[in-house]
Length: 429
Image (cartoon, rainbow, N blue to C red; front, side, top):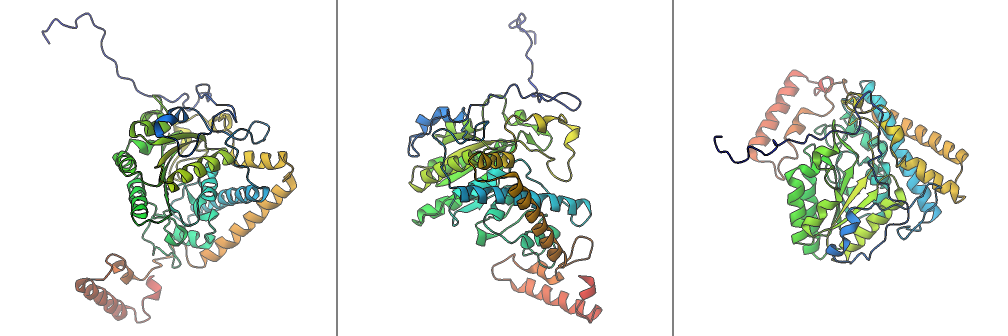
C-alpha cells in the first residue's frame, strides 16, 4: 500500500497454538489450575443460567488427595453403588485391553480404548435413568457395560461376524443398541449432538419424562453441528445434557486448536444462556454429582446443561494412532488428576469398604469373564474368515418398506448365488 497510515505500527503476528510439551520434552502441567476438592459451591439445579457463570471456570471435585469425599457436591452414594461403579469401570478397562489385543492379533480392523476416561461414561450412566437416551461419541463403551449389555454382542459388532446385529455395516466400536438407550455411534464428529437435542425436544413435546444425554470431544466443539445443537437446546429449553469430554487431545492436535487456550470449554455455555459446569472427569463422584444435578435441571423443565469433563486420554486416539509422535512420553504419569479407577478404589479403601485383595480378585474375575465372552464371540467369526452376512442383506434396512426394484434385485442376486453355489453359498460367506 502507498497509504502512509500505519507505517509506524508494529506488524501483525499470527498466534499458532502449541502444547506445553512435545516428544522428547518433559511434560508440564503447571498451567493447569487444580481447584481443591470440596471448595466449589453447589448451586440449586433450578438456578438461572446467568447466575451460574462462575461454574464454567472452576472445577467440581469431590475426592481429595486422601481419598475422602468432601464438600457440597458429595453425592453420598452407598458403598454398594460405589463398588458397582468401580466394577463397571474395571470391566470397561478389561474389555478394552482384550479387544485392543484382538486388533493387534489381526482379529478385527480397528479399536478405540477409553483408558483414563472410564468415569465419564460409567458414573454418568449410574446418575441417569435407565430409560434416558444416550447419544455417544466413540469412547463411551462404558455406557453399554454399565447398563448390562452382553459383552458377546459388543464383540460380535467389533468382529463384524454373523452374530453382529448391525450386519457388518458399521466400523468396529460404532455400536447401536436402542433397547439399551444407546443411539448409533457416528464416525462423523458431533452429528449426535443435534440428534440428541431433537430427541429431547420430541420427548418434551410429547409430555414424556425421559431426557437425552450426548457426548463429544473438545475438538468437536469447533464443528458447526455443536453450535447448531446449542442454539436449538437454548431456544427450546430442551431437556438434554451436552457433555464435552476434554481429554486434552483431538487425535494429534491438542485442545488449544479448539479454543482451549482462550477459555474453558464449559464457557461455551455462557454465550448461549445455558448452564455450564466444569468437572474433574477423573473423579467418579464429581461426575456422578454433576450429571445428577444436570438431569434434575432437565427433568424439571429448567433447560439444558453443558458439562466439560476435564480428563486425559491415557493412550492413543485409536489403534491407528501413535501418540509418541506428537506428545511427551511422560504426560500420562504427570497428569495431575490421576486415574479414575485408582481414585475410586482409594476412596472405598479409605472408608473401609474395600481392600487390595478384593480388588485383585475382582480384576482377575473380570479378565476371565471377558476372555470367556471373547471365545464365544469368536465362534461367530473374526476378520479374515470371509463374509459373514448373506449378500442379500445389503438391500435390507434401507427403507421401511423395500421398494419393488430392490426386491427384484435381491431376488436376482439370490437366484444367481444358488446357480453358482448350490449349497447356498455357505463357503462364500
